Length: 462
Image (tube, rainbow, N blue to C red; front, side, top):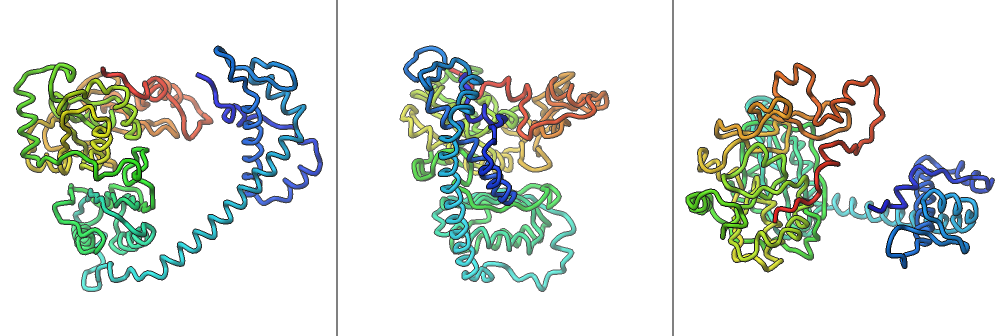
């Protein structure tokens, strides 16, 4: 695969022999120096990329100064030696544009903050003076999971309100706000989470119903902190909501209806998705479906929900002329996933489980969903039945309790049973396991290991 010239140049050092450039760089503040160096690297990479010869069918070549270069180091050395002045001019223009954009963004942010401050959000925050403070941060607790698609005129105001509301109630968790709605999972005491539900149900923008919340035992301890922010999507699929609206989603099936559909599918016997006229599609990531899933489902081996659109595109024949029954944790991913699948115009029908696995398990704890339900907090999973469908990565004994890889900066999850952990098997793969034995390692914060580099980004299931 061709390498990105910008990435190749990240560690390349330009000769800074011109004193005026050095003087200017020394006069910059630390943040400005970072921007300056970034613009210099980007300008160099852009100049090199402009010399690439795209007319050649095979290989990568660069043409500059009537010369042809066949490897990256040669063209980089040539450009650094012969085109310093052009790079400097390009870099200066890029740097000035960047500074102007940062200044405009800063002014826009200040105006946004003034607008938020001008809105009185106190009316949307419940009065807690009559409640003993300890009831808001001590005692039994819950974790709430919810989402609501609707038009939000000013996400920044909603974001400000959510921060104030959660802080007052001593809630932790994550809340995403966008013009298309809100998506949150928060933890706190029973009293605090009840007050939060009431506040959400009474807010004029959302007016949620209590049934819209999925609850499980937990509390504020299930999250390390509180994170509330404004985003483009309330669930990150990577498709602009303006292009693919949640309003195009598939029909919702109540848990009872979904149960009957799965029952009918199972009654037909064990067949592959390509042989059946119905596909039971798990819209979650592979590490979620690995520890729990519906019987006879198709569980894509994808690492992120943002890979789902590509998975559909590369496996369209799996869904052609089929009825698709779709499910996820709480329902939100199915809203966008079903809309995307419908947009391909290949399915006979597309349905989604209303309320997700959470609501299904409330109604059918011993139904067709077997194993644990993965959750995105420090519990990692919750259960409604005793089935263990996964195994220890090392000894393969039945095991479904995730731990984070012990290698620093690796955020992969690993299934390692107590016996194997006692023997030191705490890495997610042999690469991480071997790193853990060393004394010191300088690791990237986005480190690749066998769990990521060896996994196809988009699996072919056709």
